[in-house]
Every structure is written in C-alpha cells, then in structure tokens.
Length: 105
Image 1: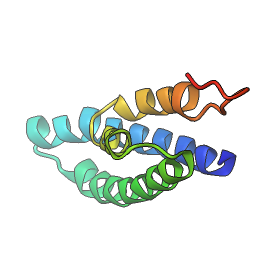
Image 2: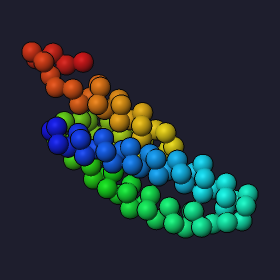
Image 3: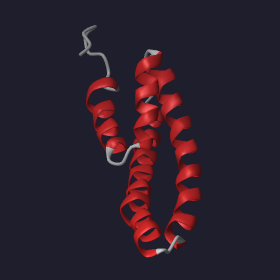
C-alpha cells in the first residue's frame, strides 16, 4: 500500500498546483485580459493529470479498503482549488495510517 500512497501523494500535489495555475492565472487572463493562451495550454494538461489522479485515488482506496463515499470525496478533491492538498494531508495522516495492534483511528 505504501507505493499506492506515494503515487497518490505525488499526483495530488501536481494536480493541485496545475489547477491553481489554471484558476488563478489562466482564468483571469482569459476573462479579464482576453488572452486564453494559459487556459488553452494548461486546461488539457490538467484534464489528463486529473485522470491520472482518479486512477491513483481509486488504486489507493481499493488497497486501503475505503468505503465508496470516502473514495468519491477524495476523487472530487482534485476538482476544487487547494482541496487536493487538503485531501492528500488527510489521507496521509488519517486514512492511510497502518492499523497498529488492531486499533484504528
């Protein structure tokens, strides 16, 4: 499960950074400056990386035995700016921690 967690953490950060660039740089340039260059370049990249994020989140959720609702919430976190960072921290510290002596958090 450690490999799945590492893959998820890396792609969550990448998707989060690309989404922030898209929303905080690309969208203002497009709608305030009539320049859609950043949106045209970064938008498809974010779309592709989000698909990779979904696969990584699904893989981790199956290995960790998460219920469907938790898996869907983590997957949706990649669509809201800054939420992928929050989801990554939450997953790492709360849900993906190994069960010690039969006691889970």
